Length: 194
Image: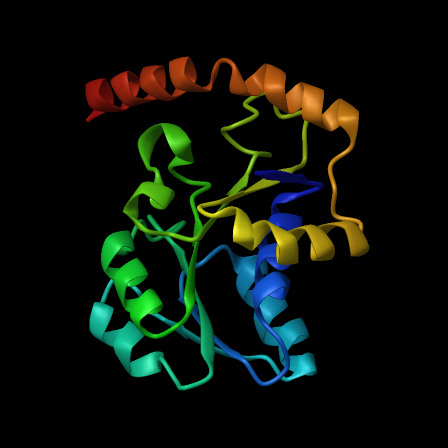
């Protein structure tokens, strides 16, 4: 795992680690707005192609893939639409097509969903939100399935200055200690309200 200076640093580091000029990525159309904007407005300037589709409809993913597709990037459940994408099916397909699967798991946290167990290669979280839980940190985290993915990530992370400072890290560790308790209480409250 690698800590980043923001959730968007986790997104851009992950994507820049596996995409080059001439490559294509397929992403969830309802993904976190700045994630989509950075790909459409900035990455496109460097000849990285993109297709954003409704990944809850697997046939849309299949149609969007091209011979130069290197990354399938999904957020599930998508925020704010709450559409669900089948992570296992996406992982199997991406690997068959020689692409990697990156999952933004911010909404679910690792307490409620573990994309690595479902075949994802890289998982990102914005720890600014529920993981930290104290509203005093801006940060992100990148978690990988296989250490081979760390080499390209480490290069981008360090060279672009996206690393988290020690105090942020300490604050995040403090907040993460209560994450399971907070998630389970939120679940109980939601069920009572429902």
